[in-house]
Amino acid sequence: MAAHTTEQFNLFISQLRETNATLDFYCDFPKIARNVADIEISLNTLNYLIGKENLREAVEALWNRDPRVFEGMDILIATRKKDDKKYIDNDGSMHSVHSLFGSVDGVMKFIEGTGLDKVFKNKEVKDLVDYVFGVETGLDTNARKNRSGKITETLVARILANAGIAYREQVSSKEFPAIAAVLGADQKVFDFAISANGKTYLIEVNFYSGGGSKLNEVARSYTDVAPKVNGVPGFEFVWITDGIGWNSARNKLEEAFAAIPSIYNLTTISEFISKIK
Image (cartoon, rainbow, N blue to C red; front, top):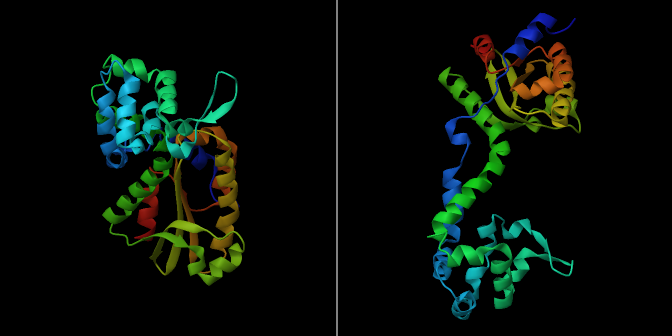
């Protein structure tokens, strides 16, 4: 017998949310500020280049004082040393952008090749510290995907705390020998573990605003894990998931919905709260 009916699944799908984003999701300003602070001294030194007509002469002056100020200059074109970005030279050969910061000639090639020479001479940037803060803000958007999952975990944690429910986060299946035994090689770190009513609930939480093959893999994985956990006396697997991305993997989610008794979204999580209270 299926864990849920088709009607229940259709209702579940209709409740999925477009976003889980809070206002602090969009930019991690403390991290941005830390990244800027790490190179602030060098950026203030490079401000010397702004407005200079003879850039080579200015670069040479800085180089003779401390060539290290140029090492992080790739952030001015929204890349970092760790990214190891490449470029094609006029002869068609490929080089590392960061390799240009090993000489005055290389620095000048970088400045002129990227167009920063005009930016400096025309004073289109007034202060490189403020400029890089903006660059870092733009680069931080790449981290939003990683923050999305954490935001949902934080939201669920807040809901549990507000309901007066004690929980633990990031709990390894290895803490429970019986669970570890049934999972075998597929050991997991569950997002939450709650002990209530003589039972331990092992909970996974996620949110998908967009589609992709990962959704099928997640649904398939939890469809496999749930009966193993539920087959151990005193344990229950719980999956809290949401996001309109599931519309692209509707069939796989429906299969999981039919196989997993305790599956909730951010609308129906109140039912789970009532159950364990």
